[in-house]
Image (tube, rainbow, N blue to C red; front, top):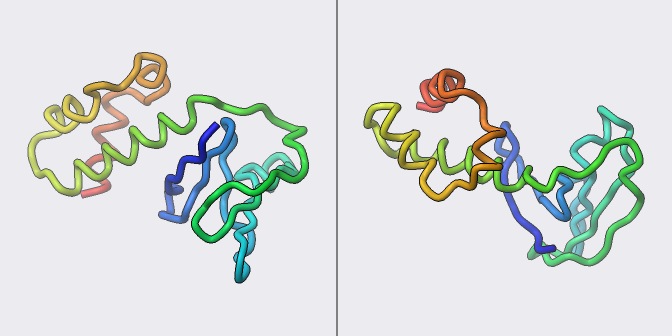
Length: 126
C-alpha cells in the first residue's frame, strides 16, 4: 500500500501507511523515524522508517492495542480539501460543502460529521 502524506490538526506532518497514521518521532541525516499517532493514547509500539523524501524503508514493532482504519487517509484528505477550499473561497458554506463533496465515496462521506459541525469548522478555518 502506498504512503500518503497529510497533516494533523496542528499542521504537523502525518504519514498514512496500511491504514495506520504516523507522526514524526525523530529526524536524522538520512532517515525519518515515525511513530504511531496512538503511541501515547494506546501505548502503541508501531513505528515506521522512511528516507528524507518519504520513501518507505521498513516498519518496526506492532500495533498491538488498536486496529488500522483503512478509511483514515481519504477522510483526512477530504478534511484538507474542505479546509483549503474554505480558506481560498469566501462563498457561502453550502457551496463550499457541495464543491468538496464531489467525487467523495459514500464510505468516506458516512464518516464525516454532520453539516452543522462542518459549518462550524469552516467558520473557524476562515
